[in-house]
Length: 243
Image (cartoon, rainbow, N blue to C red; front, top):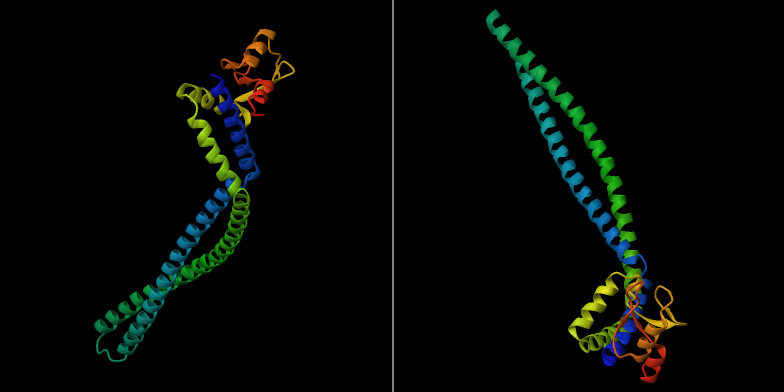
């Protein structure tokens, strides 16, 4: 059991060092994710607004062509009035002129609305283009900061992970499961703590004398009755040349 305890202490030291590295990154990972989401959303909005603007330009061109065509037909009908030879023909041509005029009026109203919508969409496009640039800048800055933080500890983290694998493999399955279970529920992942001045190094509650003796013996794993953390004696670790 002493070997399990010794490996547990070493594993905890490694995990604490890894936790410190992760803590050094601060909120950068979350900020990178948040910035990426904002950038993706802004780019999606810009893409949709660009598609909308293309549709509005196409609609405007169609209306302009329709008005031009109708105006041409109206001119033809007006010229045709001079060539009619009967009241019936005159009335028929007049009705055509009235119909084509109504169609022109309707198309011109649609064109005015389309131009107004296009201007609003164009303004929105400019806003989104600026937002995309801002989001790209922010994303680039936080990504660079996170990359710098990762690179500064890359070698140290690599060695710690290698050491961790060795200490973890040396544990029995049951002890490893116990360690993982305790660690998940504790602040900073602190599952193995020393007894200091006869108190738990995790919750600082007083440890009964008999239990303190058992911890110093190191023959079995002893847990704090208050916080559940695994206890060890610094003297025992020093005697084993692990301190």
